Length: 491
Ligand code: ADP
Ligand code: ADP
Ligand code: MG
Image (cartoon, rainbow, N blue to C red):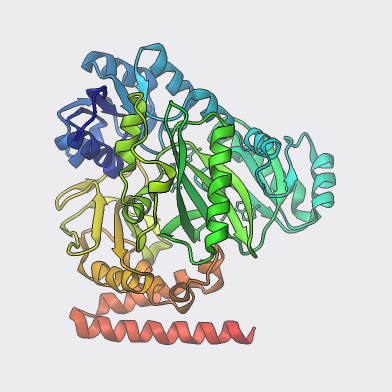
């Protein structure tokens, strides 16, 4: 039941599956929804789903989804009370957040000051150190020149990690193995940071080899309540971008799980945070280090919802309305296991490059334990302008083994035709002994040559039709995996 005092009309300044996800939460609460869409998205599902929709310009994001003034104009015209930014686009843009407030519109997210602090990796690390949160060892200052960079790196010890302070989405991070590489790496990352984020501040921290990426969901209201909803393990990454996430993490003891949760709450409170956010940590040998806070609803939030039996999008709407959270810390329990698979339109036979185009066949898996958050349908044309993720497959099971078996079943049922996808990647990972054992870290993909195996598996699968061939293909890939595992053991 919706509660008294709720905002009554919301615009979603985003597209695809996340726009639909937020609108679904609105619908359940009786909140009217407004979609904004580019020319390329005029036939998209979220546009059809919304109560009202407005065209905001051509396909390229800077002419539509990133056009702040146009978005505010539509919001005022449609008379909405709040704007939900989704993730990506303007979700972590302080200027946009302030513009919303100036126009009397609630930004459904954190306060701008907290967003600003956390948007700078240097400033947020400083403030976390002051609060006593464990961070990656390093120096929290912007590197002025080559000399200082070499001094700091020498002090910390190679290899080191060079990071753009304003970076995100896996962009602006580079490992530097030794002093010889330092000058070139620093120059190139500064140019990249300037071009991508308009800010060329770069800093240095210790490179942690083979860490696990473990992040904590936090949720706070404007009335002083702050809770965490436990962890998500996001160590299956390619080029620092997440592909599979699971919860609970296999790496945490019950004691550590509680301890890091408390640190996440402390980090969020220190930043004066409210609404949904994520504190990311690196984890190795039972040590953990705060990395950064993402000040938005994250792509992988559904696995937390499934395991803690909560609705994060709904809580965001409550918080934005000034209401209390529906849950206290002691209400949050982890039940069972959940894995999310990002289904991307990308071509295994072309270095996994994005491959937009028309989806000619599309069938989602269903049945017990299976949730699909998607923004596409059969006949929809995936535009070339945005990221390649078209759907998320979210699978819950009573325990991790059931969850893995159920995930294989769901991936087997999922049909996407007309464009190539990374479904074969997920199938290969689910057969891999390191993933199955739970003993893996962020080096999983390069260490076991996973992408090469996916290409082989994909070729075999394409040659075959039906289950017999699929079984043969899986047997072949298992042989490759066993061979790779043996060669790793002997290394
Ligand atoms: P998540 O942890 O939610 O997966 P990601 O880092 O993958 O977060 O980012 C989610 C989305 O936001 C992606 O589309 C990514 O490209 C985009 N994104 C993240 N940070 C930035 C940034 N600083 N600038 C532009 N886009 C970003
Ligand atoms: P982004 O803002 O792009 O998400 P993060 O700081 O969160 O950047 O780092 C993204 C990923 O890069 C991490 O999940 C981890 O795999 C890797 N990474 C970041 N910092 C380090 C480090 N100091 N040592 C080793 N790996 C790191
Ligand atoms: Mg990150």
